[in-house]
Amino acid sequence: MNPSQHLPKPCPKRLFFFFTPVLFFSLYYILTTIRTITISPQDPHHPPQLQVPSISHYSSLPKTSENRSPSPPPSTSSSPYFPACPKNFTNYLPCHDPSTARQYSIERHYRRERHCPDLAQEKFRCLVQKPSGYKTPVPWPESRSYAWFKNVPFKKLAEFKKSQNWVRLERDRFVFPGGGTSFPGGVKDYVDVILSVLPLASGSIRTVLDIGCGVASFGAFLLNYNILTMSIAPRDIHEAQVQFALERGLPAMLGVLSTYKLPYPSSSFDMVHCSRCLVNWTAYDGLYLMEVDRVLRPDGYWVLSGPPVTSKVKSKNQKRDSKELQNQMEQLNDVFRRLCWVKIAESYPVVIWRKPSNHLQCRQRLQSLKFPGFCSSNDHDAAWYKEMKPCITPISDVNDTHKTVLRNWPARLNQVPQRIITGSIQGTTIASFKADTNLWQRRVLYYDTKLKFLSNGKYRNIMDMNAGLGGFATALNKYPMWVMNVVPFDLKPNTLGVVYDRGLIGTYMNWCEAFSTYPRTYDLIHANGVFSLYVDKCDIIDILLEMQRILRPEGAVIIQDRFDVLIKVKAITDRMRWNETIYTDENSGFDHGTILIVDNSVT
Image 1 (cartoon, rainbow, N blue to C red):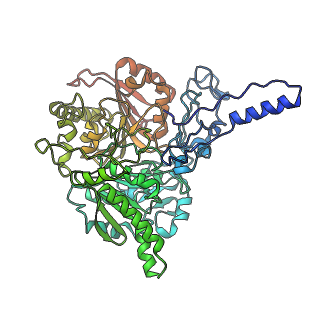
Image 2: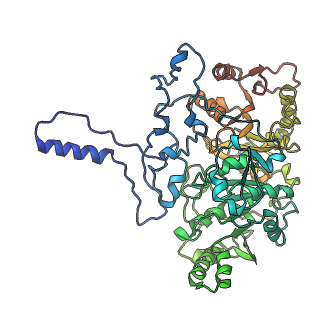
Protein backbone atom coordinates (compact mmCIF):
# COMPACT_ATOMS: atom_id res chain seq x y z
CA MET A 1 0.00 0.00 0.00
CA ASN A 2 1.22 3.47 -0.79
CA PRO A 3 -0.34 6.31 1.20
CA SER A 4 0.40 8.90 -1.50
CA GLN A 5 -2.22 10.08 -3.97
CA HIS A 6 -1.95 9.91 -7.75
CA LEU A 7 -1.49 13.08 -9.70
CA PRO A 8 -4.21 13.86 -12.25
CA LYS A 9 -3.15 13.31 -15.84
CA PRO A 10 -2.13 16.50 -17.63
CA CYS A 11 -4.21 17.63 -20.57
CA PRO A 12 -2.89 16.56 -24.00
CA LYS A 13 -0.73 18.88 -26.04
CA ARG A 14 -2.68 20.78 -28.69
CA LEU A 15 -2.02 23.52 -31.15
CA PHE A 16 -3.91 26.70 -30.47
CA PHE A 17 -4.09 29.76 -32.69
CA PHE A 18 -5.55 32.31 -30.35
CA PHE A 19 -3.97 33.88 -27.30
CA THR A 20 -6.92 33.40 -24.90
CA PRO A 21 -7.23 29.61 -25.38
CA VAL A 22 -3.49 29.26 -24.90
CA LEU A 23 -3.66 31.00 -21.53
CA PHE A 24 -6.69 28.93 -20.52
CA PHE A 25 -5.18 25.57 -21.28
CA SER A 26 -1.75 26.54 -19.92
CA LEU A 27 -3.39 27.48 -16.64
CA TYR A 28 -5.34 24.21 -16.63
CA TYR A 29 -2.14 22.21 -17.20
CA ILE A 30 -0.36 23.95 -14.32
CA LEU A 31 -3.27 23.50 -11.92
CA THR A 32 -3.60 19.82 -12.68
CA THR A 33 0.06 18.90 -12.50
CA ILE A 34 1.50 21.15 -9.79
CA ARG A 35 2.34 19.43 -6.49
CA THR A 36 -0.28 20.36 -3.90
CA ILE A 37 -0.52 19.75 -0.21
CA THR A 38 -3.82 19.92 1.62
CA ILE A 39 -3.99 19.91 5.40
CA SER A 40 -7.24 20.50 7.21
CA PRO A 41 -6.77 23.40 9.61
CA GLN A 42 -9.72 22.15 11.71
CA ASP A 43 -8.19 18.71 12.21
CA PRO A 44 -4.48 18.78 13.11
CA HIS A 45 -4.51 14.97 13.34
CA HIS A 46 -5.44 14.45 9.69
CA PRO A 47 -2.49 13.34 7.51
CA PRO A 48 -1.45 15.59 4.63
CA GLN A 49 -2.82 14.64 1.21
CA LEU A 50 0.19 14.22 -1.02
CA GLN A 51 1.24 12.91 -4.40
CA VAL A 52 3.30 10.15 -5.92
CA PRO A 53 6.95 11.24 -5.84
CA SER A 54 9.12 11.61 -8.88
CA ILE A 55 11.69 8.87 -9.46
CA SER A 56 14.78 11.05 -9.66
CA HIS A 57 16.81 8.39 -7.87
CA TYR A 58 16.22 6.10 -10.84
CA SER A 59 17.48 8.49 -13.50
CA SER A 60 20.73 6.59 -14.01
CA LEU A 61 19.07 3.18 -14.40
CA PRO A 62 18.27 1.45 -17.69
CA LYS A 63 14.63 1.55 -18.75
CA THR A 64 12.48 -1.54 -18.38
CA SER A 65 10.25 -3.12 -20.99
CA GLU A 66 6.48 -3.36 -20.77
CA ASN A 67 6.67 -6.74 -19.03
CA ARG A 68 8.82 -5.10 -16.33
CA SER A 69 11.92 -7.19 -16.89
CA PRO A 70 15.15 -5.19 -16.77
CA SER A 71 17.04 -4.20 -19.85
CA PRO A 72 20.55 -5.70 -19.73
CA PRO A 73 23.61 -3.46 -19.65
CA PRO A 74 24.77 -2.43 -23.14
CA SER A 75 28.03 -4.38 -22.88
CA THR A 76 26.29 -7.65 -22.00
CA SER A 77 23.14 -7.58 -24.07
CA SER A 78 22.80 -11.37 -23.99
CA SER A 79 23.44 -11.72 -20.24
CA PRO A 80 20.73 -13.59 -18.29
CA TYR A 81 21.78 -11.86 -15.07
CA PHE A 82 20.33 -8.82 -13.37
CA PRO A 83 22.52 -5.73 -13.93
CA ALA A 84 24.39 -4.02 -11.13
CA CYS A 85 22.77 -0.87 -9.80
CA PRO A 86 24.60 2.43 -10.38
CA LYS A 87 26.89 3.68 -7.62
CA ASN A 88 24.30 6.10 -6.27
CA PHE A 89 22.22 3.07 -5.21
CA THR A 90 24.85 1.77 -2.77
CA ASN A 91 22.87 3.05 0.22
CA TYR A 92 19.46 3.10 -1.45
CA LEU A 93 16.35 3.33 0.73
CA PRO A 94 13.33 2.76 -1.55
CA CYS A 95 10.73 3.88 1.00
CA HIS A 96 12.87 6.57 2.63
CA ASP A 97 14.45 8.08 -0.47
CA PRO A 98 15.93 11.55 0.20
CA SER A 99 15.73 12.39 -3.52
CA THR A 100 11.92 12.35 -3.30
CA ALA A 101 11.39 13.39 0.34
CA ARG A 102 11.03 17.10 -0.40
CA GLN A 103 7.87 16.39 -2.33
CA TYR A 104 6.09 15.68 0.94
CA SER A 105 4.83 17.98 3.65
CA ILE A 106 6.95 18.80 6.68
CA GLU A 107 3.73 18.96 8.72
CA ARG A 108 4.00 16.45 11.58
CA HIS A 109 7.24 15.17 9.99
CA TYR A 110 5.18 13.46 7.29
CA ARG A 111 8.21 13.79 5.02
CA ARG A 112 10.00 11.22 7.19
CA GLU A 113 7.27 8.60 6.97
CA ARG A 114 7.47 5.64 4.56
CA HIS A 115 6.89 6.75 0.95
CA CYS A 116 7.42 3.75 -1.30
CA PRO A 117 7.52 3.67 -5.11
CA ASP A 118 4.02 3.13 -6.41
CA LEU A 119 3.24 -0.49 -7.22
CA ALA A 120 1.55 0.53 -10.46
CA GLN A 121 4.59 2.25 -11.93
CA GLU A 122 7.39 0.41 -13.67
CA LYS A 123 10.09 -0.86 -11.38
CA PHE A 124 13.76 -0.88 -12.22
CA ARG A 125 15.49 -4.09 -11.31
CA CYS A 126 19.15 -4.23 -10.42
CA LEU A 127 21.48 -5.56 -7.74
CA VAL A 128 22.55 -3.07 -5.06
CA GLN A 129 26.34 -3.12 -4.81
CA LYS A 130 28.57 -2.89 -1.76
CA PRO A 131 30.66 0.27 -1.37
CA SER A 132 34.26 0.34 -2.48
CA GLY A 133 36.56 -1.12 0.16
CA TYR A 134 33.77 -2.98 1.97
CA LYS A 135 35.01 -5.54 4.52
CA THR A 136 33.40 -8.44 6.33
CA PRO A 137 31.72 -6.77 9.34
CA VAL A 138 33.44 -6.90 12.71
CA PRO A 139 32.12 -10.04 14.50
CA TRP A 140 29.96 -9.91 17.60
CA PRO A 141 30.56 -8.91 20.37
CA GLU A 142 33.48 -6.75 19.17
CA SER A 143 31.08 -5.04 16.75
CA ARG A 144 29.34 -3.39 19.69
CA SER A 145 32.41 -1.15 19.96
CA TYR A 146 33.84 -1.02 16.42
CA ALA A 147 32.79 -0.89 12.77
CA TRP A 148 34.70 -0.47 9.51
CA PHE A 149 34.48 3.01 8.03
CA LYS A 150 34.23 1.69 4.47
CA ASN A 151 31.12 -0.30 5.40
CA VAL A 152 29.28 2.81 6.60
CA PRO A 153 31.21 5.62 4.89
CA PHE A 154 29.51 8.58 6.58
CA LYS A 155 31.60 11.07 8.55
CA LYS A 156 28.82 13.55 9.29
CA LEU A 157 27.57 11.91 12.48
CA ALA A 158 31.08 11.71 13.94
CA GLU A 159 31.56 15.41 13.20
CA PHE A 160 28.15 16.63 14.43
CA LYS A 161 28.17 14.57 17.64
CA LYS A 162 31.87 14.76 18.46
CA SER A 163 31.33 16.50 21.79
CA GLN A 164 28.67 13.96 22.81
CA ASN A 165 30.81 10.86 22.11
CA TRP A 166 28.30 9.07 19.89
CA VAL A 167 30.95 7.82 17.50
CA ARG A 168 34.55 8.61 16.62
CA LEU A 169 36.46 7.96 13.41
CA GLU A 170 39.91 6.50 14.07
CA ARG A 171 41.85 5.71 10.91
CA ASP A 172 39.90 3.00 9.07
CA ARG A 173 37.24 2.27 11.67
CA PHE A 174 34.52 3.86 13.76
CA VAL A 175 34.70 3.59 17.54
CA PHE A 176 31.54 3.72 19.67
CA PRO A 177 32.51 5.01 23.13
CA GLY A 178 28.94 4.75 24.45
CA GLY A 179 28.08 8.42 24.62
CA GLY A 180 24.81 10.13 23.76
CA THR A 181 23.15 13.54 23.80
CA SER A 182 21.93 13.02 27.38
CA PHE A 183 24.96 11.00 28.45
CA PRO A 184 28.12 12.39 26.76
CA GLY A 185 30.22 10.91 29.55
CA GLY A 186 28.98 7.41 28.78
CA VAL A 187 25.79 5.42 28.92
CA LYS A 188 26.71 3.43 32.07
CA ASP A 189 26.16 6.30 34.52
CA TYR A 190 22.91 7.19 32.74
CA VAL A 191 21.55 3.64 32.99
CA ASP A 192 22.68 3.46 36.62
CA VAL A 193 20.24 6.28 37.39
CA ILE A 194 17.41 4.27 35.82
CA LEU A 195 18.64 1.10 37.55
CA SER A 196 18.31 2.85 40.93
CA VAL A 197 14.56 3.07 40.29
CA LEU A 198 13.61 0.22 37.94
CA PRO A 199 14.36 -3.52 38.28
CA LEU A 200 16.36 -3.82 35.06
CA ALA A 201 18.12 -7.00 36.19
CA SER A 202 15.01 -8.85 37.38
CA GLY A 203 13.75 -10.05 33.99
CA SER A 204 10.45 -8.20 34.38
CA ILE A 205 11.62 -5.66 31.81
CA ARG A 206 12.53 -7.50 28.62
CA THR A 207 11.31 -5.52 25.57
CA VAL A 208 12.16 -1.83 25.24
CA LEU A 209 11.41 0.74 22.56
CA ASP A 210 14.05 3.48 22.20
CA ILE A 211 12.66 6.44 20.24
CA GLY A 212 15.32 8.58 18.56
CA CYS A 213 18.00 6.01 19.28
CA GLY A 214 21.12 7.62 17.84
CA VAL A 215 23.62 4.80 17.27
CA ALA A 216 21.74 2.59 19.78
CA SER A 217 24.26 2.84 22.62
CA PHE A 218 21.37 2.76 25.12
CA GLY A 219 20.07 -0.51 23.66
CA ALA A 220 23.59 -1.91 23.47
CA PHE A 221 24.13 -1.38 27.20
CA LEU A 222 20.74 -2.86 28.14
CA LEU A 223 21.88 -6.16 26.64
CA ASN A 224 23.94 -6.53 29.81
CA TYR A 225 20.60 -7.10 31.57
CA ASN A 226 19.18 -9.43 28.87
CA ILE A 227 16.91 -6.61 27.71
CA LEU A 228 16.10 -6.52 24.00
CA THR A 229 15.66 -3.02 22.59
CA MET A 230 13.96 -2.00 19.37
CA SER A 231 15.86 1.17 18.45
CA ILE A 232 14.18 3.49 15.97
CA ALA A 233 15.10 6.78 14.34
CA PRO A 234 14.25 8.51 11.06
CA ARG A 235 16.62 9.15 8.22
CA ASP A 236 17.59 12.76 8.92
CA ILE A 237 20.50 15.19 8.79
CA HIS A 238 22.50 12.92 11.12
CA GLU A 239 22.59 10.38 8.30
CA ALA A 240 22.71 6.64 8.81
CA GLN A 241 22.36 6.42 12.60
CA VAL A 242 20.19 3.30 12.18
CA GLN A 243 22.75 1.86 9.77
CA PHE A 244 25.45 2.37 12.41
CA ALA A 245 23.28 0.53 14.94
CA LEU A 246 22.76 -2.48 12.65
CA GLU A 247 26.43 -2.54 11.66
CA ARG A 248 27.13 -2.86 15.39
CA GLY A 249 24.85 -5.92 15.55
CA LEU A 250 22.02 -4.15 17.40
CA PRO A 251 18.27 -4.32 16.64
CA ALA A 252 17.15 -1.17 14.85
CA MET A 253 14.93 0.09 12.05
CA LEU A 254 13.93 3.37 10.49
CA GLY A 255 10.89 4.82 12.21
CA VAL A 256 9.31 8.09 13.28
CA LEU A 257 6.40 9.38 15.33
CA SER A 258 4.54 11.29 12.67
CA THR A 259 1.20 10.48 11.06
CA TYR A 260 0.84 6.72 11.18
CA LYS A 261 0.93 4.37 14.13
CA LEU A 262 4.22 2.70 14.90
CA PRO A 263 4.22 -0.75 13.20
CA TYR A 264 3.90 -2.68 16.45
CA PRO A 265 0.91 -4.23 18.24
CA SER A 266 -0.64 -2.79 21.38
CA SER A 267 0.84 -3.70 24.77
CA SER A 268 4.18 -4.78 23.30
CA PHE A 269 6.94 -3.05 25.25
CA ASP A 270 7.79 -3.24 28.93
CA MET A 271 9.50 0.15 28.72
CA VAL A 272 9.66 3.04 26.26
CA HIS A 273 12.58 5.46 26.36
CA CYS A 274 13.30 8.88 24.87
CA SER A 275 16.57 10.73 25.40
CA ARG A 276 16.36 14.16 23.78
CA CYS A 277 14.54 12.56 20.86
CA LEU A 278 13.21 15.92 19.59
CA VAL A 279 9.56 14.90 19.79
CA ASN A 280 7.09 17.56 20.89
CA TRP A 281 5.19 15.36 23.31
CA THR A 282 2.47 17.87 24.08
CA ALA A 283 1.69 18.68 20.43
CA TYR A 284 -1.66 17.67 18.90
CA ASP A 285 -3.21 17.29 22.37
CA GLY A 286 -0.61 14.68 23.38
CA LEU A 287 -1.22 12.46 20.33
CA TYR A 288 2.30 10.98 20.35
CA LEU A 289 2.09 10.08 24.04
CA MET A 290 -1.20 8.33 23.29
CA GLU A 291 0.67 6.23 20.74
CA VAL A 292 3.36 5.45 23.32
CA ASP A 293 0.55 4.44 25.68
CA ARG A 294 -0.85 2.10 23.01
CA VAL A 295 2.38 0.13 22.55
CA LEU A 296 3.32 0.15 26.26
CA ARG A 297 2.25 -2.80 28.37
CA PRO A 298 0.01 -2.32 31.40
CA ASP A 299 2.32 -1.48 34.34
CA GLY A 300 4.98 -0.49 31.77
CA TYR A 301 7.46 2.36 32.23
CA TRP A 302 8.01 5.56 30.27
CA VAL A 303 11.51 7.03 30.73
CA LEU A 304 12.14 10.57 29.49
CA SER A 305 15.24 12.74 29.54
CA GLY A 306 15.92 16.00 27.77
CA PRO A 307 13.65 19.03 27.43
CA PRO A 308 11.62 20.02 29.26
CA VAL A 309 12.59 17.81 32.22
CA THR A 310 16.36 18.41 32.15
CA SER A 311 16.12 21.97 30.85
CA LYS A 312 14.05 22.82 33.91
CA VAL A 313 16.93 21.87 36.19
CA LYS A 314 19.48 23.72 34.08
CA SER A 315 17.26 26.78 33.95
CA LYS A 316 17.12 26.97 37.75
CA ASN A 317 20.84 26.49 38.05
CA GLN A 318 21.47 29.28 35.57
CA LYS A 319 18.84 31.55 37.18
CA ARG A 320 16.95 31.94 33.93
CA ASP A 321 13.26 32.55 33.60
CA SER A 322 11.73 29.08 33.74
CA LYS A 323 8.11 30.09 33.17
CA GLU A 324 7.98 28.64 29.64
CA LEU A 325 9.55 25.38 30.80
CA GLN A 326 7.09 25.16 33.68
CA ASN A 327 4.24 25.61 31.23
CA GLN A 328 5.61 22.77 29.10
CA MET A 329 5.87 20.52 32.15
CA GLU A 330 2.31 21.41 33.18
CA GLN A 331 1.08 20.49 29.70
CA LEU A 332 3.07 17.26 29.85
CA ASN A 333 1.69 16.36 33.27
CA ASP A 334 -1.84 17.15 32.08
CA VAL A 335 -1.47 14.56 29.30
CA PHE A 336 -0.17 12.02 31.80
CA ARG A 337 -3.16 12.64 34.08
CA ARG A 338 -5.49 11.98 31.16
CA LEU A 339 -3.60 8.76 30.43
CA CYS A 340 -3.81 7.79 34.13
CA TRP A 341 -0.02 7.51 34.29
CA VAL A 342 1.76 8.04 37.61
CA LYS A 343 5.15 9.67 38.07
CA ILE A 344 7.26 7.28 40.13
CA ALA A 345 10.68 8.95 40.06
CA GLU A 346 12.47 12.15 39.09
CA SER A 347 16.21 11.81 39.29
CA TYR A 348 18.36 13.97 37.05
CA PRO A 349 18.57 13.55 34.12
CA VAL A 350 15.48 11.30 33.86
CA VAL A 351 11.83 11.32 34.87
CA ILE A 352 9.95 8.01 34.98
CA TRP A 353 6.20 7.45 34.72
CA ARG A 354 4.23 4.21 34.95
CA LYS A 355 1.17 3.12 32.99
CA PRO A 356 -1.70 1.68 35.09
CA SER A 357 -2.40 -2.05 35.16
CA ASN A 358 -6.04 -1.34 34.26
CA HIS A 359 -8.48 1.50 33.75
CA LEU A 360 -10.96 0.42 36.43
CA GLN A 361 -9.99 3.11 38.92
CA CYS A 362 -9.84 5.98 36.44
CA ARG A 363 -12.49 4.92 33.91
CA GLN A 364 -15.19 7.11 35.43
CA ARG A 365 -12.92 10.15 35.41
CA LEU A 366 -11.85 9.46 31.83
CA GLN A 367 -15.43 9.10 30.68
CA SER A 368 -16.29 12.46 32.24
CA LEU A 369 -13.62 14.19 30.17
CA LYS A 370 -14.67 15.54 26.80
CA PHE A 371 -11.25 14.73 25.35
CA PRO A 372 -9.68 12.31 24.82
CA GLY A 373 -12.04 9.37 24.92
CA PHE A 374 -11.33 5.68 24.62
CA CYS A 375 -10.52 4.40 21.16
CA SER A 376 -13.55 2.80 19.52
CA SER A 377 -11.66 0.41 17.26
CA ASN A 378 -11.97 -3.29 18.01
CA ASP A 379 -8.47 -4.00 16.71
CA HIS A 380 -5.87 -2.02 18.60
CA ASP A 381 -3.07 -4.18 17.17
CA ALA A 382 -3.69 -3.02 13.58
CA ALA A 383 -0.89 -0.56 12.88
CA TRP A 384 0.25 -0.80 9.25
CA TYR A 385 -0.38 2.58 7.59
CA LYS A 386 -3.06 3.22 10.21
CA GLU A 387 -3.42 6.87 11.14
CA MET A 388 -2.87 7.81 14.78
CA LYS A 389 -6.05 8.83 16.53
CA PRO A 390 -6.35 11.16 19.54
CA CYS A 391 -7.81 8.56 21.86
CA ILE A 392 -6.74 6.26 24.69
CA THR A 393 -6.33 2.57 23.97
CA PRO A 394 -8.43 0.74 26.57
CA ILE A 395 -6.76 -1.90 28.71
CA SER A 396 -8.73 -5.11 28.43
CA ASP A 397 -10.36 -6.05 31.71
CA VAL A 398 -9.57 -9.75 31.91
CA ASN A 399 -11.45 -11.79 34.49
CA ASP A 400 -9.05 -12.70 37.29
CA THR A 401 -9.80 -16.40 36.80
CA HIS A 402 -8.47 -16.18 33.24
CA LYS A 403 -5.69 -13.66 33.78
CA THR A 404 -2.14 -14.90 33.35
CA VAL A 405 0.67 -12.92 34.92
CA LEU A 406 3.47 -12.36 32.41
CA ARG A 407 6.53 -14.17 33.69
CA ASN A 408 9.97 -12.70 33.93
CA TRP A 409 12.53 -13.40 31.24
CA PRO A 410 13.54 -16.03 30.22
CA ALA A 411 10.53 -18.01 31.51
CA ARG A 412 8.14 -15.99 29.35
CA LEU A 413 9.79 -17.27 26.16
CA ASN A 414 7.93 -20.58 26.43
CA GLN A 415 4.98 -19.37 28.49
CA VAL A 416 1.65 -19.68 26.68
CA PRO A 417 0.68 -16.02 26.01
CA GLN A 418 -2.53 -14.53 27.37
CA ARG A 419 -3.69 -13.79 23.80
CA ILE A 420 -3.76 -17.52 23.06
CA ILE A 421 -5.40 -18.50 26.36
CA THR A 422 -8.25 -16.03 25.79
CA GLY A 423 -8.75 -17.19 22.20
CA SER A 424 -7.65 -13.91 20.62
CA ILE A 425 -5.42 -15.78 18.14
CA GLN A 426 -8.02 -17.67 16.15
CA GLY A 427 -7.08 -21.25 15.36
CA THR A 428 -4.19 -21.35 17.85
CA THR A 429 -4.59 -23.42 21.00
CA ILE A 430 -2.30 -24.12 23.92
CA ALA A 431 -1.48 -27.50 22.40
CA SER A 432 -0.73 -26.10 18.93
CA PHE A 433 1.46 -23.36 20.45
CA LYS A 434 3.61 -25.95 22.22
CA ALA A 435 3.72 -28.15 19.10
CA ASP A 436 4.90 -25.18 17.04
CA THR A 437 7.70 -24.48 19.50
CA ASN A 438 8.89 -28.10 19.34
CA LEU A 439 8.64 -28.18 15.54
CA TRP A 440 10.92 -25.18 15.14
CA GLN A 441 13.50 -26.64 17.50
CA ARG A 442 13.79 -29.60 15.11
CA ARG A 443 13.74 -27.49 11.98
CA VAL A 444 16.53 -25.21 13.14
CA LEU A 445 18.73 -28.19 13.95
CA TYR A 446 18.01 -29.53 10.47
CA TYR A 447 18.89 -26.17 8.91
CA ASP A 448 22.19 -26.30 10.74
CA THR A 449 23.09 -29.64 9.17
CA LYS A 450 23.02 -27.88 5.79
CA LEU A 451 24.26 -24.36 6.58
CA LYS A 452 26.32 -24.74 9.79
CA PHE A 453 25.14 -21.34 10.98
CA LEU A 454 24.37 -21.80 14.67
CA SER A 455 27.82 -21.56 16.20
CA ASN A 456 30.22 -20.33 13.52
CA GLY A 457 29.95 -16.71 14.67
CA LYS A 458 29.21 -15.36 11.18
CA TYR A 459 25.54 -14.55 11.73
CA ARG A 460 24.32 -11.92 14.18
CA ASN A 461 21.44 -9.97 12.57
CA ILE A 462 18.65 -12.35 11.56
CA MET A 463 15.44 -11.57 9.66
CA ASP A 464 12.40 -13.88 9.79
CA MET A 465 10.11 -12.68 6.99
CA ASN A 466 7.05 -14.64 8.17
CA ALA A 467 7.55 -15.21 11.88
CA GLY A 468 4.24 -16.79 12.85
CA LEU A 469 4.32 -17.45 16.60
CA GLY A 470 8.04 -16.69 16.86
CA GLY A 471 9.13 -20.34 16.94
CA PHE A 472 12.19 -19.80 14.71
CA ALA A 473 13.50 -16.98 16.91
CA THR A 474 12.76 -19.00 20.05
CA ALA A 475 14.90 -21.86 18.74
CA LEU A 476 17.79 -19.42 18.16
CA ASN A 477 17.55 -17.79 21.58
CA LYS A 478 20.53 -19.57 23.14
CA TYR A 479 22.86 -18.43 20.35
CA PRO A 480 24.48 -14.95 20.07
CA MET A 481 21.92 -13.75 17.55
CA TRP A 482 18.84 -11.52 17.53
CA VAL A 483 15.85 -11.88 15.21
CA MET A 484 13.66 -9.26 13.56
CA ASN A 485 10.34 -11.14 13.55
CA VAL A 486 8.23 -9.86 10.68
CA VAL A 487 4.50 -10.59 10.44
CA PRO A 488 2.76 -9.67 7.15
CA PHE A 489 0.24 -7.00 8.08
CA ASP A 490 -2.75 -8.68 6.39
CA LEU A 491 -2.06 -12.21 7.59
CA LYS A 492 -4.78 -13.80 9.71
CA PRO A 493 -4.53 -14.44 12.54
CA ASN A 494 -2.29 -11.54 13.56
CA THR A 495 0.45 -13.16 15.66
CA LEU A 496 2.90 -10.31 16.25
CA GLY A 497 1.46 -9.70 19.72
CA VAL A 498 2.34 -13.30 20.62
CA VAL A 499 5.91 -12.67 19.46
CA TYR A 500 6.20 -9.74 21.86
CA ASP A 501 4.53 -11.65 24.68
CA ARG A 502 7.36 -14.17 24.38
CA GLY A 503 9.96 -11.45 24.98
CA LEU A 504 10.93 -11.16 21.30
CA ILE A 505 10.68 -8.16 18.95
CA GLY A 506 9.43 -7.60 15.43
CA THR A 507 7.30 -5.49 13.11
CA TYR A 508 4.45 -5.54 10.64
CA MET A 509 5.35 -5.50 6.96
CA ASN A 510 4.04 -5.74 3.41
CA TRP A 511 6.66 -7.58 1.36
CA CYS A 512 5.36 -5.99 -1.83
CA GLU A 513 7.23 -2.95 -0.49
CA ALA A 514 10.77 -2.40 0.78
CA PHE A 515 11.72 -2.87 4.43
CA SER A 516 12.65 0.16 6.56
CA THR A 517 16.34 -0.57 6.73
CA TYR A 518 19.57 0.19 4.92
CA PRO A 519 21.32 -2.12 2.46
CA ARG A 520 23.61 -4.85 3.84
CA THR A 521 22.13 -4.98 7.35
CA TYR A 522 21.16 -8.66 7.82
CA ASP A 523 23.42 -11.72 7.94
CA LEU A 524 20.68 -14.32 7.52
CA ILE A 525 17.17 -14.09 6.10
CA HIS A 526 14.59 -16.80 6.78
CA ALA A 527 11.49 -16.98 4.55
CA ASN A 528 8.97 -19.63 5.51
CA GLY A 529 6.04 -19.71 3.09
CA VAL A 530 6.59 -16.10 2.06
CA PHE A 531 6.50 -16.65 -1.69
CA SER A 532 3.35 -18.78 -1.59
CA LEU A 533 1.77 -15.99 0.42
CA TYR A 534 2.71 -13.24 -2.05
CA VAL A 535 2.73 -15.02 -5.41
CA ASP A 536 -0.69 -13.55 -6.31
CA LYS A 537 -0.10 -10.15 -4.67
CA CYS A 538 3.02 -8.86 -6.40
CA ASP A 539 5.96 -10.08 -8.45
CA ILE A 540 8.28 -12.30 -6.42
CA ILE A 541 11.22 -10.91 -8.41
CA ASP A 542 10.87 -7.66 -6.49
CA ILE A 543 10.75 -9.49 -3.14
CA LEU A 544 13.97 -11.33 -3.96
CA LEU A 545 15.68 -8.13 -5.08
CA GLU A 546 14.66 -6.52 -1.80
CA MET A 547 16.19 -9.48 0.05
CA GLN A 548 19.39 -8.93 -1.96
CA ARG A 549 19.40 -5.24 -0.97
CA ILE A 550 19.24 -5.88 2.77
CA LEU A 551 21.43 -9.02 2.86
CA ARG A 552 25.11 -8.67 3.65
CA PRO A 553 27.43 -9.71 0.79
CA GLU A 554 28.50 -12.95 2.50
CA GLY A 555 25.10 -13.58 4.04
CA ALA A 556 22.76 -16.57 3.81
CA VAL A 557 19.10 -17.17 3.01
CA ILE A 558 16.82 -20.05 4.02
CA ILE A 559 13.61 -20.31 1.98
CA GLN A 560 11.02 -22.94 2.84
CA ASP A 561 8.06 -23.31 0.50
CA ARG A 562 6.23 -25.55 -1.94
CA PHE A 563 8.44 -27.30 -4.46
CA ASP A 564 6.81 -25.63 -7.48
CA VAL A 565 7.27 -22.21 -5.90
CA LEU A 566 10.93 -22.87 -5.09
CA ILE A 567 11.60 -23.83 -8.69
CA LYS A 568 10.39 -20.37 -9.70
CA VAL A 569 12.45 -18.79 -6.93
CA LYS A 570 15.60 -20.63 -7.99
CA ALA A 571 15.20 -19.46 -11.58
CA ILE A 572 15.34 -15.90 -10.26
CA THR A 573 18.16 -16.39 -7.75
CA ASP A 574 20.25 -17.91 -10.54
CA ARG A 575 19.98 -14.54 -12.28
CA MET A 576 21.15 -12.88 -9.06
CA ARG A 577 24.31 -15.05 -9.00
CA TRP A 578 23.38 -16.51 -5.62
CA ASN A 579 24.94 -19.80 -4.57
CA GLU A 580 21.85 -21.87 -3.78
CA THR A 581 20.88 -25.50 -3.21
CA ILE A 582 17.44 -27.13 -2.98
CA TYR A 583 16.85 -29.83 -0.36
CA THR A 584 13.78 -32.06 -0.27
CA ASP A 585 12.33 -33.71 2.84
CA GLU A 586 13.84 -37.11 2.11
CA ASN A 587 15.58 -38.77 5.06
CA SER A 588 15.11 -35.76 7.34
CA GLY A 589 13.06 -37.61 9.92
CA PHE A 590 10.17 -35.13 9.75
CA ASP A 591 8.21 -33.19 7.17
CA HIS A 592 10.04 -29.88 6.79
CA GLY A 593 8.90 -29.30 3.21
CA THR A 594 11.27 -28.27 0.46
CA ILE A 595 14.06 -25.87 1.36
CA LEU A 596 16.29 -23.62 -0.72
CA ILE A 597 19.45 -22.50 1.06
CA VAL A 598 21.65 -19.68 -0.22
CA ASP A 599 25.17 -19.46 1.18
CA ASN A 600 27.01 -16.52 -0.32
CA SER A 601 30.05 -17.09 1.88
CA VAL A 602 30.94 -20.02 -0.41
CA THR A 603 32.64 -18.86 -3.59
